[in-house]
Image 1 (cartoon, rainbow, N blue to C red):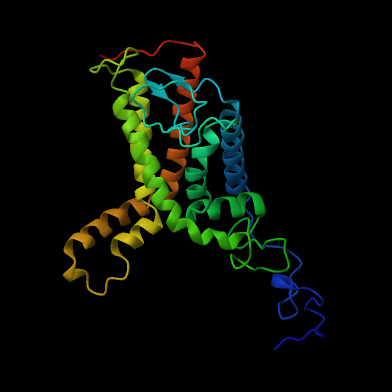
Image 2 (image 1 turned 135 degrees about the vertical axis):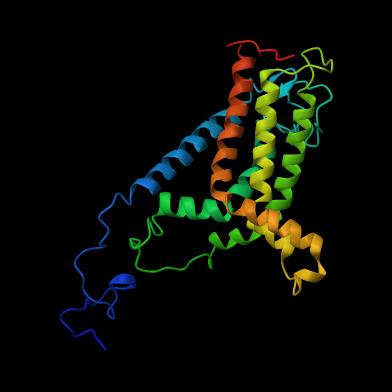
Amino acid sequence: MATGTDPHVRTGARGVHGTLRAAIPERHLRTDRWWLPPAATAAGLLAFVVYSTWRAFSNADYYDAPYVSPFYSPCLAENCEPMRDGPNWALFGTWWGLSPAILILILPLGFRLTCYYYRKAYYRGFWASPPACAVPEPRQKYTGETRFPLIMQNIHRYFFYAAMLVASILTYDTVLAFRDEHYEWGHMGLGTVVFAANAVLLWMYTLSCHSCRHIVGGRLKHFSKHPVRYRLWGWVGKLNARHARLAWYSLISVALADLYVYLLAIGAFDDPTIF
C-alpha cells in the first residue's frame, strides 16, 4: 500500500489529492466540454433569480383583470391591488409595507431550493461540488448536508405540502381566468391558456417530486396488498423519471405567466380573445 513517503503520492493534501492516492498531475482525464452543462445551469438559474427578485420587489404591474401574477397569488397583505373574487386573505393587515410577493414566494422557493434535482443543479453550477462526473471539487474536505445550513435541506418533505397548496391556488386562479375584464364567465383569452399550461406544469413538477413518490408508495412491504397505492406509485414513478425536465419547464412557465401579466398591466398589448 502506498504511504506518504512514496514519491508518486502527494503529501500534505486531502480529498482526491490525499496521501493514499496516486499523484496524477491532471485534475481529471475528461476531454469533452464537461464544464458546459454546469455553466448553462448556473446561467439559467441566475437569470431566473434576477428576474424573480426584480418582479417580487417591484410591487407593481402584477394584476390585469382577470389575471394575477403567480408571484403575487394569493395576496396576504392589505397593500395588494384590489382583486375581486380572488384567493386573497389580508392576514398581514396594513403593517406589512413590503411587496406582498415576499409573503408567498417563500413557499415555492423553499420547495425548489430543497428539491433533490435543484440541489444537484446549483451544487454543481454554483459551488462546483462537484462540477461534473469524474471532475473533483476544489475543496479539500467534503461534509455533504450534515452541517448548517445544508442540513436544512431535510425539510424538503414539508415544503412539498406547501407546494401542493400553492399549486392548488394557482389552479383556482386558472379557473378565474375564464372570465373577462368585467368578471363575466364564458371568456377565454391567451392569458387563460398561459395560466392553464403553467398550472399543469406546476402540478406535474410537484407530483414528480421524490417526496411525493415516497408518500404514495413508501414503507410498503407488499405492493400486492395495496393495489391502489401501487398504481399511484407507478404513475408518480413515471413522472419522477422526468423530474429534471419538469423542474425547468415549470420554472420557465411560471416566469412567462408573470411576464405575460406584467406586459398586460403596463399596456404593451391587449389580451387576445379566443372566445
